[in-house]
Image 1 (spheres, rainbow, N blue to C red):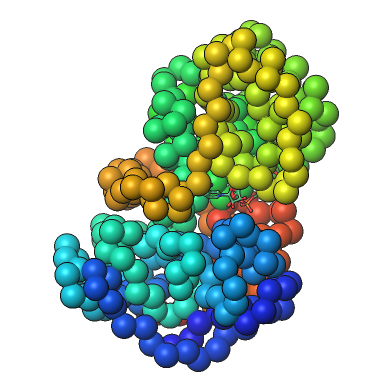
Image 2 (cartoon, rainbow, N blue to C red):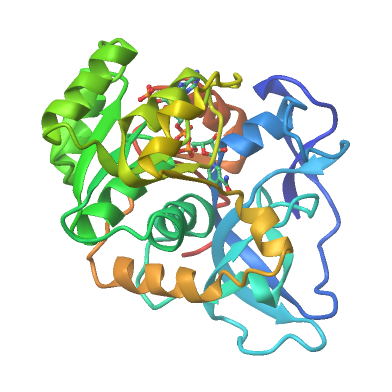
Length: 333
Ligand SMILES: NC(=O)c1ccc[n+]([C@@H]2O[C@H](COP(=O)([O-])OP(=O)(O)OC[C@H]3O[C@@H](n4cnc5c(N)ncnc54)[C@H](OP(=O)(O)O)[C@@H]3O)[C@@H](O)[C@H]2O)c1
């Protein structure tokens, strides 16, 4: 089969398609013909050798995919050959930038008919993370205010829609007027151009928009200086979710910005959570049902063929994306 194999860490140019042996499903595994694979920032960091769980090359990237079941390993049940599914990868396991992947049945969820594979491929990691953070950690309630940083990103654009669907009021911060206009069209109630505002100005806008209360829920994938703002922007009893550090920078925080407000800070990392016993299938199944019913719409920024994984990474690194970047293998949908 064809797969994108990182033979040595480096820039996007190290992403080349090579022929590798077809995988066979092991004990409890499902073999999937990959139709589309979501491209995540963790892939970019792994490619560059900067991801904390990158392992050593050679590495096949890709943490999420949509495709068709082609075989079942011994003990793998609940699926049939020909079934459409999404799958979630594991740190250190062969990834989904490939025509086929063997993955534990515990990380596979069936898809209803008719879902676009490029959209479905965004669900297991980016969308599922937004869902888990808002519902399971943030316990978002109707009428609450949710502040979402980098709201046009893969995770951010999911979070905007999930929060709106939960009945929350969404303040979405994104980096350009093009992006703020786009997140408003996704349903965000208020938008802030994060690159045009200083941190203090952003906080003043959040205070203004909430009559001084702040946001009950804050979703932070940016980290660095933005995380310090997230704590300041949180309302009394607020919940702040830190699930990434796109800024690749430490945060200087003052504990007085959150403990007097009884604010809780939640860390989230999907693969670690699963490795420590969380079964993602229930939440992912609920999310898939909402997408299938048209309650949530997965925006795909761009689709690249497997041969141009480098282009997909360049696009993600451009910081211009709105929604998800996806790779397709050319397999029939
Ligand atoms: N913890 C987990 O389990 C988990 C799960 C899924 C994703 N993640 C992580 O969540 C983060 C966001 O993922 P994503 O798919 O939404 O990312 P994405 O689509 O690539 O978007 C990232 C956005 O972050 C903003 N940003 C702010 N500061 C930045 C900086 N210094 N450099 C680059 N971008 C910056 C940019 O938007 P603006 O131009 O609007 O500022 C950029 O478009 C990634 O780090 C990803 O690895 C974590």
